[in-house]
Length: 500
Image (cartoon, rainbow, N blue to C red; front, top):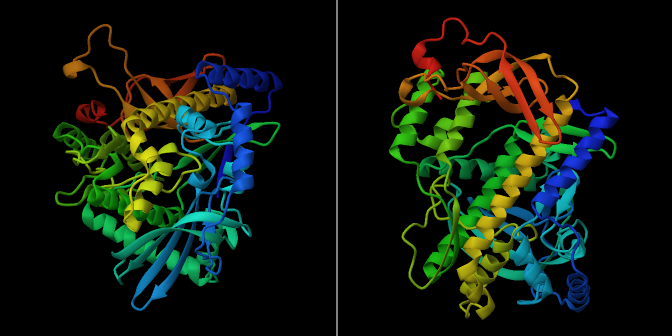
């Protein structure tokens, strides 16, 4: 279960934080409210919406999301099919509510995706669509794009289809509820099959060389009076559920490749230098990466409750770089693989919250039906790459800035105090030398509160250290620590001290 490391109860700090978060939105030109013409069009779209003719409301769909979620993109239903499985994966029918070229469409292209801030989300679509009419809420009949998969006994996709249909979710579950039900032994078959299929798909991921960064998650929460930083280790149920989404994204990618039209989520493989550096870090931190073991399998072997292995998992992010979008129409692109997934992949399961998914759904549905891809979807392909890349950059800046602001606020009354921490990353002098102007610095994560911050001193990646807070400035969203003893812990070799 998530838990709070530290809350913010000082009134002055609260006011400073509120202002800092407001300024962050202004700096990034983020506006939550929608223009009147967008809201008017949304109301008309809801009034005039008609349901698909295919009726799948008899299936036992469920949604699995974080607590309190209202923009529910996906619902899943699983059954046994002989020695294999049948999986239905329903995705919110956003295209039914967005007229091509209309006010909602133009505003969605400007926003790119829903972005999340501690003081509220900035939605991609008006809330009366994203959190009501199109959301796969429990007990509500909703239009959806429904992917249907037949899997063999090993979880390999043997057949798939996609069509619009009406569904009704039976229950809205959280990951914690799913995990608790399964662990208790009293889970219904739908959840037991989710685990069964999820584990099979994880094994297939291992065999093809795919990888996942299963880092502890940090979330900023606000109960109306105070802000909290919540952390929780990833639950197995999250991984099982994610495997259904990954399977769908891979199927969408292959469908578009075969049809020679679409947009892929791509990422290049790491270069030899980056892989070599990571192997060196693994050796230094006492967890060598065995020759012949796939990268993803090695990451799954790491125990992030152990300080050195947590540091190594953070270092693994250096190999997950360069992700982007690749649209094509006719000639196939030279690079079509998402290296971390180790397969072609497309974003198609979150259209309420991500612009590109709406176009992928429409393209895939046309390809499955062997009909022409709508001209409005084809015409959008040249600009989707830049729209999504810009939106991702903006989201990252907001997420990092908000976390920096909240961390500074949480620590603002603790300047001068000492904390236990783990070194996540450490710098090293250029070419192994220490010029006079070189300032040793690195990144640490405190044991409690769970804050990741800059720290000055000769740090060693993976080591447990004692640090002192020297700055926590809310207006500039800056937190800085210093190493208490100023030197690496006894017994650490010079080679280890230079790693990172």
